[in-house]
Length: 514
Image (tube, rainbow, N blue to C red; front, side):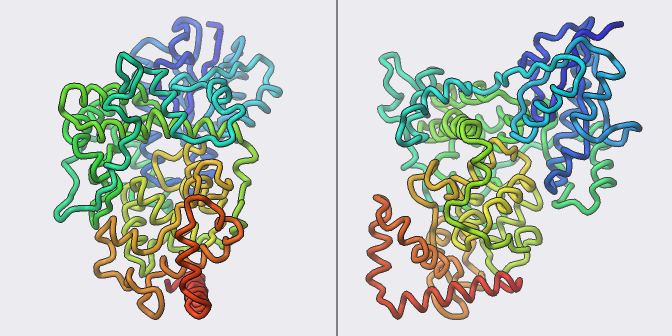
């Protein structure tokens, strides 16, 4: 039988609504999926991330076969595998002689370059199809961005609400009278705040085989493989979504910025890995959250805050990535070059907040957005860590991380390396913020109320050192006058002491004793 089209599905494109599947001819097309070492190791991915994607891919391939599609699936240890995506496409073209090859546009610039180079090497045409899971096309984002002095997410988000009719009234005004209820979503943790019960799925033969594979082939990989809690099919992911909407969304808003010892999940959805891999669709998730509000089972601040993360921030970040790549990946506006300290990988540090966040990361391939931004990201910003090294760490350790979403969040939001393209001011904070928004500081070797001396919280002196060394850049920032007014009031002696303390913290960081 002659193959008409070889249709390639990547590991984060497990969506049957994409044209790559929806337009396939079951009688003459072949779908190619491949587990390859080049993708599993281009950064040292968390072993749970690898296992999640391999299991989800194998389950998806099985579902496609049951639906009548012809699937060529290359497992990691299959004999003859080239261990690269382009190599497997070339091998399949040589063996199957298709009339053409089709792929869905990838989510990372490096793969786009791979496919562009491959198109020149193939003896048949290569079609790159749009990824229609997203709610804003590249052209639509560029049209919105063109001519604007500032690309603020809030205004983009409002356009997306209007376009998709989410939390919008008949007269075009936002539900509740306001577009954004973020001010209601910043409560510190109350005593006894914990995580609601989460779902767990039985491991079938496919998942057990994948876990054994990952344990065998990535024995020295980063992270804890088991217990393995991920949904690996669309049906399981939909159950996760329904569970979140019914049991967790109602209290999501109030405590979305809170952090608690021993509680990695709190009121967060854990759905981002499933949306980004294609098991859930962003619009269906937003509509279920809106329905929960309309039906009276979730407050508006919770529904709006959750929807904003998906309809607003997720789409905006993707737009930024594709509009400004490849240059965006090289940006380092604050001239930060400090190597990533070893404790980001080992978790061995006396700073309780970082140790707790890194423990969550190691165990679950997950930490929530405030831990990423205001703990590990904040420290990286204050200490002047190299943006590329920090970016590769975030890309490696989180199960929901792909470059299109991770890179702008890291370089732009956390590190201000894009010179304010995303954020109007750097997200820099002292130990006081961490003390307010978490219970991490109790029992820490450092005191968040102390800036100088042996027990001084490193975030304090590093914060003021950051402020001082970037005075020329930020002193005129409209959101930072009080910061620099306070710095000036300290006087020269206090300023010098703080900067000396910061250097002591950096020295300890380099020595591995911080």
